[in-house]
Length: 439
Image (cartoon, rainbow, N blue to C red; front, side, top):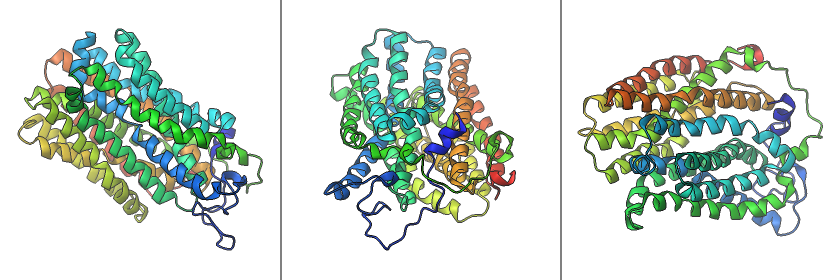
C-alpha cells in the first residue's frame, strides 16, 4: 500500500479535540459542516450523524456472522459438501486470507469512491455472498461465494475506524467502543442462534447459513444514504494543508514487527476458535446446540471487555502485563479443553473468551505506539495486513492435524503452543515506545 494512500486516508494531523466557540452538532464538527469540512445544510446537520451511528452499528453486527454461523454448522456443511478435514481447515483460513488480500485495496477504493460508498458495497457483498454460498453447488462455489462475503467484511473492517475518526473526531473512544460492542454482539449472536434457528426453519444447513444475508441487506440501507453524500470521503481533505509528519520507515521498527506478530497470533487463535471450538465440544459429547452457545459465550466476552481493556491499557505505560494475563487465560483454557473438554466446558469457554480479547488490546497498542496520525495509519495498515497473513496457516494446520491424528490432542497442543510467542511479542509490543523514535 502506497504511503500517499495511507496519508490520504489518515485523520488530519491536528489534535482531535475541537473548539467550543461555534455550535457543534455532537460529531466534533460545526453544525454546518460534514466530514472534511464539506457543508451539511438544513436538517441533515441533525439527522445525518445519527444515521452514521446506525450504519456503524449495523455494519459491525455483520462483520462476523458469516464466519461464526459456519463454525456452528461446520459438521453439517462438511457432510453436505463432502469436505475433508483439510479442506474444512482451508475454509477456516479463508477469512484471514481475504482480510489480508482485500483489506489492502480498501484505502485506494475509498480514495476513489469515498469510505461510505465502499462500506455500502461491502455490506452488499456480504448479503450476496452469504445468500448464495449454500446453493452455489459444491465446495468450489461455496468457497467462491464465501470469498465474496469476506471481501465485503475486509474492506469494511479497514474503513470503519476511518469513518469513526472522520465523523466523530471528538468521540473516537466511545464510538470505537460502540463499534466493538456491536461487532462482539453480532459474533456471539450468530454462534448462539444459528443451530436452533436452523432447526426452526426446517433443519437444512443451507437455510441456516443463508438467513444471515437478511441482516446484511438491512445494513445496506443507511449506507446508501451516507454514500450519496460524497463528504464522507476522507479523500476530500487530501488537498488541505497539513503540518509536516515525521518520516517513518515502518518495516525498520521492532515495535511495528512485534505488533504485527502479536496481531497475527491473536487472530490465529480467534479464527481457530470460531472455526473449530464448537466441533471440539461436539466431539466430546456436547450437543450441537450447546456447543453453539458455548462459542457464543466465548465471543460475548468481547462485549464488556472491549470497553474495559482499551481504557485500562491507555492508563498504563507498559501494556505487557495485559498481554501476559490474556495469554495465561488462553493457556488455562486450552489445558482444560485437553483434559476435560465436556466436564468444564463453560469454564473453558469463559477463559477462551477472555484470551480472545487480545484483539481490542492490539488495536489500542497500535494507537499508542505512534505520535502522529499518519504514523498510526501506517502502523495499523502494516500490523493488520502482516498479521492476517501470519494467521492464515493456523486453522488449516488444525484441520490437517485433526484429520490425520483422529483426535484433538495435537491440535489443542498447537493452539496452546502458539500462546507462548504471543505472550512474548505482546510484552515487546507493549513497551512505551514510538515508531517515530526508532522503537
